[in-house]
Amino acid sequence: GQQVMQIPQYQHVQEGEDFTTYCNSSTTLSNIQWYKQRPGGHPVFLIQLVKSGEVKKQKRLTFQFGEAKKNSSLHITATQTTDVGTYFCAHFAGGATNKLIFGTGTLLAVQP
Amino acid sequence: EAGVTQFPSHSVIEKGQTVTLRCDPISGHDNLYWYRRVMGKEIKFLLHFVKESKQDESGMPNNRFLAERTGGTYSTLKVQPAELEDSGVYFCASSQDLRDRGQETQYFGPGTRLLVL
Image (cartoon, rainbow over all chains, first blue to last red; front, side, top):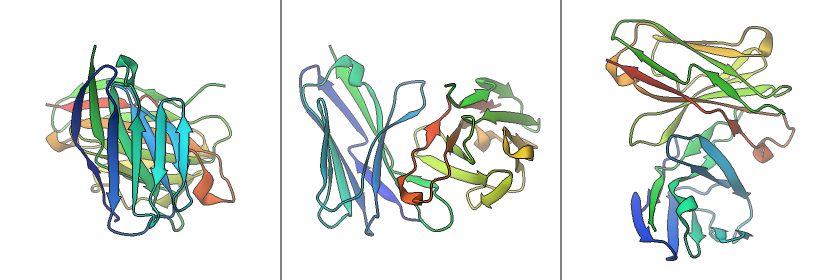
């Protein structure tokens, strides 16, 4: 399958600092989705990007899809303790099924 | 509207025992997916139902895993016999059957945390 790598694996920031996680694929992706999983929780859909170079914002979160549609990023401005969790990128595998292929995830810890 | 529900929330069993996980999708959602996250690793796809039919079971680890969705409503995932490496969090997700397959949103349940000792 199309493996998607995320970096960093883990990030520890002070509250108020910015945070960015990157998602990289060796192949062109038709779409990219981002999910957030709180500790002990389940993945919650954040957003989907489908267009080359697309940028979407949700309050302090900025999502970007690369021009070549092989990478994506999630940037959080001025982190808060509520941002703690694991952020996953994912994409539809395509074909007859819409199974999601998840990235390796980035665990964000925010120190108050 | 109720979300995706899963039962049990936790299960601790011994190696060799059988465990059955249940997932109730959002009402009206034809698509039902099972995923698993082994500790520290990414979430991996197991299989996909469209109504009662298995659309894709390419992610099922081996024949110790059996999934069913009789009647196209809730689904069960049975592990028999369980092995140590089966430990992890099993997530179920559901989505509507949209013609534009690339636009659907999958809603995840709270997961079942399985520990095999």
